[in-house]
Length: 216
Image (cartoon, rainbow, N blue to C red; front, top):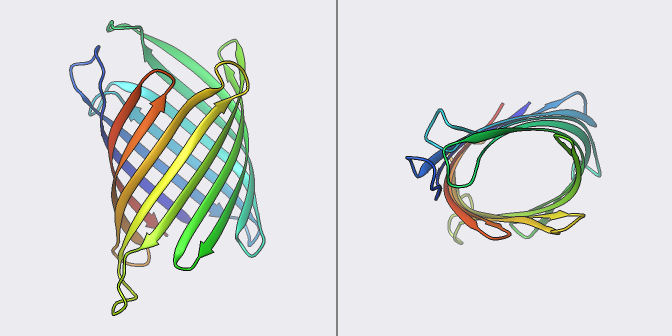
């Protein structure tokens, strides 16, 4: 069973909150049924503040099928998302419920020592009484930082970009850019610190990511 536990501390520019710091807590698990099939589980708890001011609760699950010597996976999933959105510059919030069905395809590549991961995801979103479609493309790379004398260096560089596109106006939803440095403590645990910027249609947001990956 592979589990990634992620804790994110992020500075956010919000006019309606007392604190400029928020927190994301993320659990991602993949349980193997056999060599081909797997069950995906995911929980994300996001706060505007350090704790206690809910921004979004996201629950995902899905059934996946692995092929091509474990390099590719297709998955059919379902997600429930509860968003607590602030109204303009006030302290008033409105709750938005979303049910989401999604299909995704992931692909792993290796070019020399560089690892590449592609993820294509198509979402059918039922947001309250509205229906929306969205496409997401995620590209990540992992580069070990080693010299000629030490080919087993535990340090690595990580980066990714994910773009979100709607099928209706406006087409552009958001874009996430991330870069960070990681350290492999052992074969089961690694730590990573990085910077992410989210570009929205009219605004942007920066955050500092502190991440722990644990594999059981």
